[in-house]
Length: 251
Image (cartoon, rainbow, N blue to C red; front, side):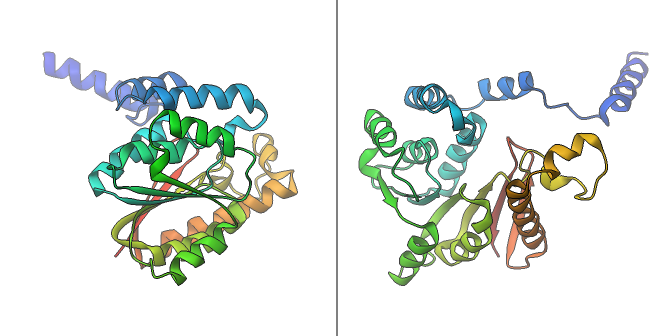
C-alpha cells in the first residue's frame, strides 16, 4: 500500500514540472548554503562591489560560480590559471584562494578602473602574490603568452569579458590550455536571449530583440554556442548555472 501511494505521489510531482526542481532564488540560496562556504573576503568583495559599483554590479560572478570553480581547481590540482575579464577581482580572488602557494593567476582586463579594489581585497585575503593583473587587450596578451612558449601549460581559463571577442578568446585558449585542463565561458545564456527564437513574435521576447548593441552580443554568443556544440576538438557541457556556463576540455 505504501509503495502504491508513493508511486502515485511521484507521478503527481512529475506531472507538475517533468519531475524536475524549478530553480527559484530560494533554491539557489539553498544550494549556496550547502556548498563550500565563501571566504569572508569573497563576501566582503561582493558587498563592496554591490555598494560602490552599483551601476554595473551585475557583472560580478555569482557565489555559485565561484564555489564551482573552487571545486574544479582542486580536482584539477591546478597551478596556472587565466582570468579573462577581471572586473572588481572576485573570480581572480577565488582562483587565488583555491590555488596552492606556488600557484599563479594571470588576470587580464582592458581597464584599470577597478584596479584599486582588486588589490585591496587580494591583499586582504593574502593572495595578492599569486595574482598578476595585466591591463591590456585580452587578445594581445593571450597571444603574447603563446609567443612566450606557454602553450599547453595552463590548467584553467575563465572567459567573462566582451562577448564579441569570445570566439577569438576560445581559439587562443585552446592553444594555451593543457590536455585535461578546462576552459569556462560565462554568460552563454545571456539573460536567456541566446536560447529563444530570434524571430519570435512573443511580447516577452521583445526585450531581447529591440536593442542593436545587445543583439550584436547575443548573435556572437549564439554563433559561439553553436560552434562549440559541433566542435570535435573538445568535450563540452553547458550548464544553466547563473547566466549560463559552458565548460570544455580538449580531446
